[in-house]
Image (cartoon, rainbow, N blue to C red; front, side, top):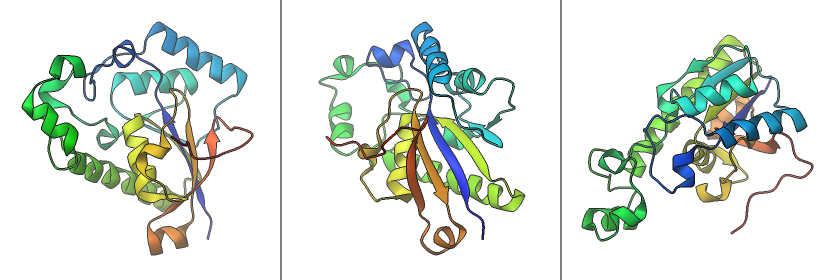
Length: 212
């Protein structure tokens, strides 16, 4: 049975992230520096070819697609969007300091959602449903390779749930414009729901999980 390769790529940098603001569902575009960095990465290393290109619907991801895969059609998938921070969108931790709800969320974000937002558990369930649908689509349509351009939190959730070698989600942090290459082997996927993380993308000389 043939295997499938998926490249999980984090979108380029945005000003709001650099300022330390929560912008999960806030639809902001790439910063000037973010665009320049993506073009530099593409020029120096090149992004892997992919038969199909999937993206979060948010602008910072679709803009990244246009820059690193120019001219290629993009299929947006709503479940690949970043976590919703609800009423805290656009605010920084400093602005929320002292808010009892914020303190409670920091201590137990898996079960406690921000006001009007998603809990960590809800976010993870949504992302996993979306990723499994993509794997099913690739298998059903015999798509051998795909790139998913999405958010850091989405990639860490996918690899924390399905990735081999197994590691906590925070171990799968990546810089803007970079990500990981995974191999989906049908037998392993059907039996254990796991994927092999075999390299970084763009490809690096040596792959290893980030340490603290």
